[in-house]
Amino acid sequence: IRVLSVNVLSHNGDVEGIKTLIRRSNPDVVVFLEFTNFWSESFREFLVEYPSNYLYPAEDNFGIAVMSKIPFGVVKEKFLVEGGPPTILATLMHESGNIGLIATHPFPPTSEERFKVRNQQLLQLALYARKTMGKVILAGDLNITPYSSLYKQFIKESLLSDPRQKFGLALSWPDQAPKPLQIPIDYILVGDKLEIADFYSDEAPGSDHLAVVADVVVK
Image (cartoon, rainbow, N blue to C red):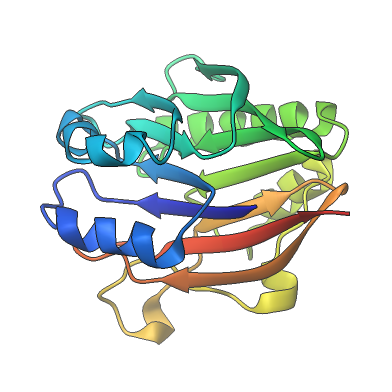
């Protein structure tokens, strides 16, 4: 299962560049962050190729969407924390059995309140991922680096695996900064009944983020 997670940047106008990214990576599942009504209209052509889709556009940088070639079972948006941004929770009806999908974009810690809400959301994400019994993919911009003690606690509590341990940092933000100033905040994580065979970052034209791509396999 190839998964692409891309923060398109809400005011990005390079639609063709993002479309080229999708065609180049040819994912089975795409997670879009900062997904606005503009992006919803711009991606209509992909809805035939990705018939399972759940779009939750918003104009506040926290719209989110999932498009999938793999059929959905249950799919919904959920606000895991009061006052926080939406998360999409879906079930992929894969040939190997159902696989949970979590698409999420917690707040950046730009204020004390947003710091608290982000941390609470990470805790709720960890609890939800742990309940899936290992067949789950989490993708999104977590607005936290893997160096953080809170992130390490999140990984421990969620029982998720981070492919950066095997494939390198895949720096993702800010795209225009020199490499020494970039940090990895975009993730694709999996439960212990799945593994990642490849993981890398890729250019997302017009965005301030690089996209991340993972090839997920069932153990």
